[in-house]
Image 1: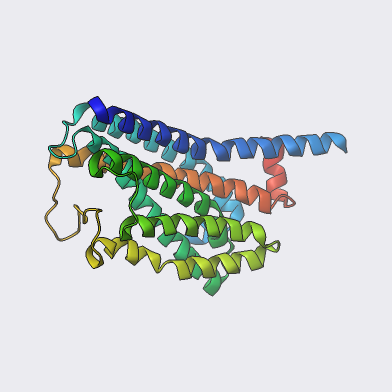
Image 2 (image 1 turned 30 degrees about the vertical axis):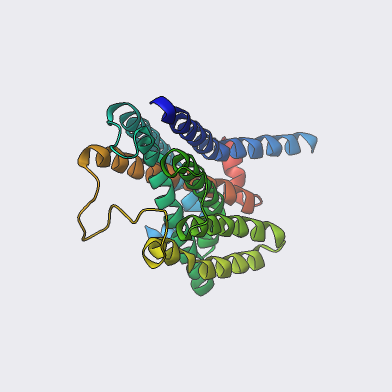
Length: 44
Length: 242
């Protein structure tokens, strides 16, 4: 890709990071909620 | 079916399978479309290899506007019919809208440098998309700033509806003003100004990003529902079974 390679690959790397982050966030959040609920139960 | 899906409990249960399939289809489509655009499309005569940035930039920019329109419609539905799921949608979609707009802006900047020779220019299109980013950011910040859920939902709805004025400004900015940004290459009822060899991977990525983000918004809505209805029996039962 010559001189344009740095721009093209940077965009796809940033896209992968952004889309990966929004894709995994809800699943991590649900897992965190489950863990917190379990800890609350154990404390009681 | 729509009445059932307006119930948080039924929505939460029904959305689970949708999230799985939308993620699977979206990720597969994005992988195919991106690989196609990166490795199998020839360099464009004037843009050279930087044309490959379009396969992320155009879908992200298009989707960001559609998410905003959907939030504004949900805001109107919430104000008129007090539908709680409309507020859940607004809360789930606003951060995703901010991130897709950021992706559109960053990819535009990275495309502008090799193509226009500048990273950024304050023309009508780029500025109105930057305003769209601040609007999404405002929707998220406003919700967090107001403690009471009902008041926050009303304020966010009003801001979403008022901010919708920016969408036709983005769309027609390249016609109303003299801009460095080129006019639309694809419009309904007009000849498409892009060759099929460049167009097909663009459509694959556009459709796939829509599908993937639909799955992400549904998944975010499920998280929001668990947060809102933590004390209800159906959420307790879900916790017990998972």
